[in-house]
Picture 1 (cartoon, rainbow, N blue to C red):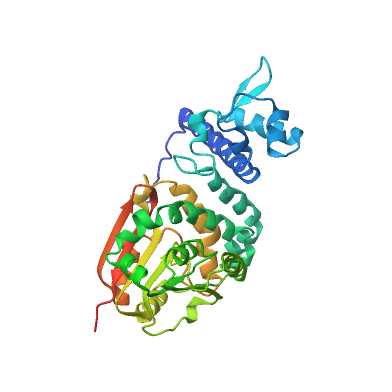
Picture 2: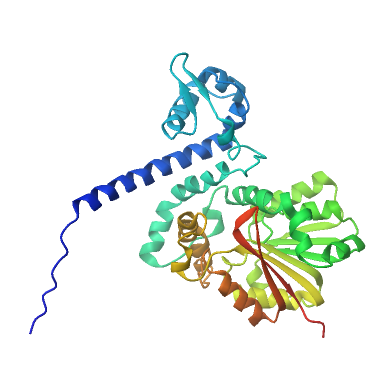
Length: 363
């Protein structure tokens, strides 16, 4: 006996509604690219807190070509980001919009995230090859990646480092004042470590990262600051093996895209002195897809995972856990690495991340 499955009737209204949704997605993607342009050129700063102005006045403030600025403004008018006044052909960035689009914006600078969309477009052909082969990518395939991540760290880590983040680890600030050995694993451009080195001259700071360009940038900053208590080294953390060397170890959004996150966490545990503390920032989404419906910017994070975090791990022959590996996975890996007294925190200024504090039990 054959079973005939009756196809559901086509819902024309639902189809039309979905077309509108797709159009909205395309509009949003275009607006995101323009946010990136506004961020990179300083155009938002040229408009913030100022009265309506012509495209030439805005271009002159930013030191840019008027014709390009005028087209950029037109796109943002269509996206309801910038206001346009036809009577005198002037443009205005409302204070409520500038509050999340400029450097040091009171609501957090969201414009810099538009750079992720631009970056994904630049590596699309490379990732399409990976879809066919199952292979991966390398960090050097991503132009400006470390610059974007340094901006992210400046907002989510550095801005709150001394008032909010370090106080999560009991006793660590007092230890830093007295003088301890600190490691930032996967440090990128080292913006957080540099701030700690400035604040705590009695402590010694080490930063490791796979990206030679990021380390070179950090080393220039050390020389400019004249700091003698900090060093940066280009290093593949998949071969990291130091024993009981550090009192305090940090990783900022760095573990999930490693070749072998579990192996790295075990290595970090070994590298801590007994009683030492490990502070880990990572994406705070769930390992279960169905739990992430309401997670902030979940679609963007899965896209970044598909284009960057997953393939760079696979490119090293790694697990390819991806950006959304889940706080549950992170917690279980910390336990498997040997950490105890694990606490995790959600911070109001940083809704996308979870902060783990773990301690190495004294032997």
